[in-house]
Image 1 (cartoon, rainbow, N blue to C red):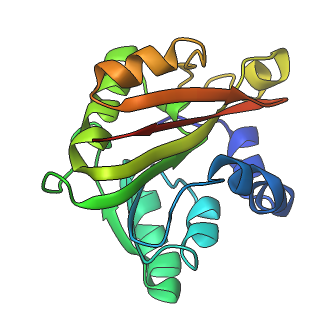
Image 2 (cartoon, rainbow, N blue to C red):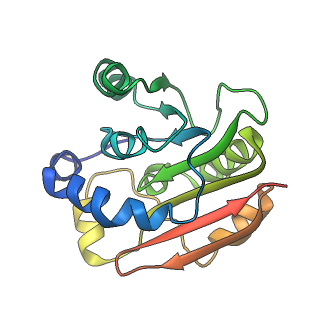
Length: 190
């Protein structure tokens, strides 16, 4: 997951954390039960993990970047009791039906290919318990978004085609809702 210098600076900033904690994450998780065993795929620098930890019954986070995973384990993991794992969201190291909710925030566009995104969706469905929710948020395309990602791994997910892709991965009732700069998605499992 390549991220340019500007992008790394934004994702570590207080302004980003305030926006994510204040409006973005509450919107993304509205009506999602986070009180059980929750899996976060792609926590990055941990801004979202810090928000999730006190809301989840138990929180596990899987990060594909080994250095980020180690840093998160030493900070957020130790401080908030989050189980941080180094791993790939498209090949999760958990048994079937392990989690009550699976979430991912502003990371799908960093998954290199549509095929790998689809494997991530299938893995999220596999580890989700019946009655659980897969939810998250990602950014909508714009000139500003593209400029922030110059030199990054950038593979945007079209919010209009995402419900069909989630259905193909085994989810039920998939849907998206458009926001000003981002969209949220939700799907379940029977």
